[in-house]
Length: 252
Image (cartoon, rainbow, N blue to C red):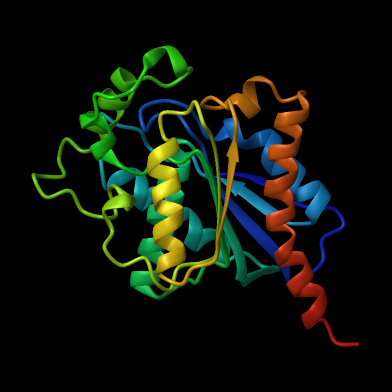
């Protein structure tokens, strides 16, 4: 875990668990440093990024179990309000974040307050699609997607469980409010838009932000552009709802 503590810290403080991207096969917790530091500094959250193990050496369910261990650790930290924990992730980390909210709901030990999913990797069935125009995609291709999912699911069996691929979940009710951001030139656009629609149909508040022309991880690669700054500000604004909740609950 890489942990960023606000200074000075209000107690009990909201918290955010961050899960990094990398197609389930690469990346590290350090990829979340900039975002975690920003959330800690600007919003006053205690933030933690999980160094989950990677496929193919560690396929499902190992990475998800690591993330759940991180959630339990964060919820037990002194000064953290366990009722105000957001789970955030990008790409593969966004898919793990969605799966983690499902796992938390089913286990009933911890109830996350928000889920913030940036172009999440949700649906292994996207690997079977052949209608993509590869010229419109950047940074994450159908071939890379097939490798990532194949590596992650190699021990999952023929019946892929919802905790492995959240888009397969039949019941999306009683999940925390969600923010989903994705670009129109992202391989995950369709599965993200569909997941947002299904969350809403299940009674879960969901804000879907679609970026015209946005490609996979555009906000990281072009972080200084107005469109990337707007993407970041929307995520921060959604997370700031936990700060507003804290202010409302504080005695006069």
